[in-house]
Length: 640
Ligand code: CA
Image (cartoon, rainbow, N blue to C red; front, side):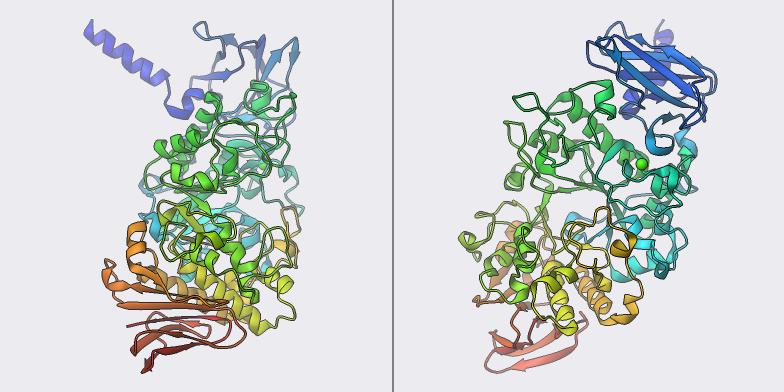
């Protein structure tokens, strides 16, 4: 009897798959496939259709699914035979009307344009050596994040890459060598799940979109694969990309957009469980906290669970190292904390701590101001970004980089990583009038990202009569502030080659001519890449710049007297474990002329001066009166 029970338990374990598969549209088996879909309680009928193709053609089978007797909302069907290579859709009837075919919300493979679920054997999609692939071990405080779009990165002829605009570009030596030379250790890839705005049946035509229009959350985007008609291709190629980056010691962070869907009526959410997944206003209209026409309801059990299972799936199936939550401020705090709890500690989580409109939710949202209630989750600092380049609501207004005084405290706020620090006057900070981070690793330091103008365009638009020399000086000054911040530094891809987007502020669907990286710039402006490399290498080699603990930052970092357009600070490296430098002085001068700071008299090694940066030392400086000069529009870093 006991043996019998064990046998039944084993069979049950085999039949009841784990995690996402428990809810997935299809659970494939070589002799039969089990389908399931969850609906609202008032669903009247669910049709399952099986197809030979991902698009077009008539169904080869239509099955009426059965409501699970123990549940009012789960519908199931088992289909005999080997269905590998087939496609499927669900169609749910409410109020006498079918809502329309869709792959359901749990599809892990789809046909072209994501209209139908695909039946694949996921194990067969693993590239060779995948079972030994491991997430690189890099602590949050040591991360240097590079935000990139697949098409921007490789589409131009000058990239020299074979797989232009594809996942596979990131497996090519040219790509890997560039990232390694630059020194970044995490790539943050813009939406790479299946999105709507690129027609995968017309990939021979140039099409561009950032991809913030989700369709199938748990499937890679077909437009970035070599063949969107073959469901395995995008899955395998995505894994190959992760594997190549991991082999180079680079983490892969996924930009996730659970806050809204491409549309409402056509979404997998709405077609299976109408109005369950979206927030509504009191008048019955859909709330639009995303600015994209709808907003999801993360506080509902089904939506929260979907988000948790989805990120867990990306970690387990694709070995993803981190997540950047688009408009994280649309989600509730409990959900973000539940996601943090559900993922391994080394998975880095950060997001935009704001929304794009008011949300129909009365509880606490995952806004920047609430970051202290979300341990282990970081938020972008618009304080530091805007203090450097100028405010988000104007492209032409300058700030620190443009020689405008009054931004110093906001920059200091970013230097310490948005924590409580006695040297920062929070009343003078541009946005947050109090520190929001408990630990410095809860702040993302950056000056540009895919949104808004890139750094070059912004400098051109906001600094009147800027020369190329000034542009380079200010670009390097800005990134020095970012890369020496105690927060987690983040850069937009292509800044290291002085990219521009021809002044386009919101390039989400601009052509390649606007968005592409011009790799020829590496030869035109070699001093820029050299400086970025030197700067990043310095950060990595010196724990003083990424102490990782608020207490250590408070104890070991102190500010020199602030002047207009001049911010300077000192780190006592002797107190920082692993640090080989003693007193470190860092100064940022946004003036058009040289300025001085006063340090204790003595001899110092200069590692960053006048747009050169080399942690081995550029020269030494001896000062008897303690005065040290910082050339115009540049950073100075010295140590003893
Ligand atoms: Ca797509």
